[in-house]
Image 1 (cartoon, rainbow, N blue to C red):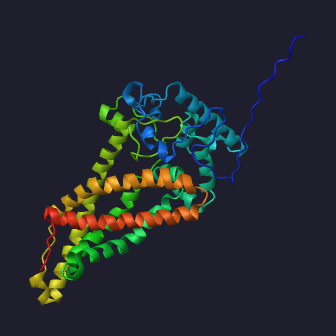
Image 2: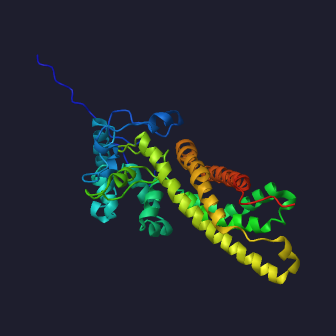
Length: 368
C-alpha cells in the first residue's frame, strides 16, 4: 500500500500595530535569525566582509555603485524575506505601498527594510509631532532607526549647559570667575555643537536613492558607509570593516567643520561681551583679554573630529543600540533614564577633556 506523504506545514506570524519587537527577531523563515544586537556578536558583526564589486553595501541597488554586501545567497534570502514580511504587514494594515513615502516604498520593494521598520513607522505616525518630522528625510531615517532619537537630542541640548558649566567650575575652581570669558566661550561653543553631536553619529535606516552611474570612486565608497561605525546592520544589508572606518573619517570631517564654525560663533560672541564689559568696568579692562578666535576655532574643530567623534560613535552605536536597547526595548522609560545618565556623564567628561586639551595646545592659559 502506497504511503501518504505528509505535507510540510508552516505558520505566519501575526503582526499587531500595538506590539513592539526588536529589529532582528521577525522572521518567516525557519532559519534561525541573526542576532546582531547581542554585545557578544559585536566584533563578528563589525568585521563582515563584502565580496561583490565595489565592496559597498546592499543599499546601493542597481546603478548605485555601492555593490552587493558580503552575504551572498544569504543576503539575497534576507532581502526576499524582508520584502515578504513588510508587504504582509502592509496588507494586514490595509496600507497600499503607494501610500508610503516614495523612498521608503522603494526600499521595501528592494528588500532593504524589514517589517519591524514598517511597524515602527506605524507607531511613530500616531504622534502629530513625529508625523510632521517624518516628512524630512534626515529625521525619517533617524526616527525609523531609533524612536528615542528626539529624546536624546533633548537630553544633549537640555543638560548640556548645566553639565558643561559644572565641568568648567570643577576644572577651573578658584579661577572660575577670572576665566569667565573662557567659560562663556566654552559653553556657547558646546551648546551650538550639541545638536550635531547627536545628529551625525546617530544610527539610520538608509533610504537614499541609488548613486548615479557616473559617480566617482570616493562618492561610491562613502555612499556605502553607515552613519555610525558601530550601528547594527539590518537583515539584507552589510558593512565591511573598511566602510565602518570610513564612517568615522566622514563624521570626523563633518564634526571638524561643525566645531570650527561653532567656535567662531562662540568666541566672536565672547569677545563682544568682553569688550562691552571693558566699557562698563574699567578695572576689568586690565585683566581681560580677547579670546584668540582662529586658533581656538581650529583647536575646537580638531577636538570635535577626534574626541567627540569617537565618544559619540561608541555611545550611540555600542552602548545604546547594542547594549541598552536590546535589554530594555520594552521598557522605554527605563531606557530613556539610562540614556539620560550615560549622555550626561559623557557630556561632563567631554567638558573636562576640552579644558585639558585647550590648555595643552595653548589656546587657553591658567591665570594667576
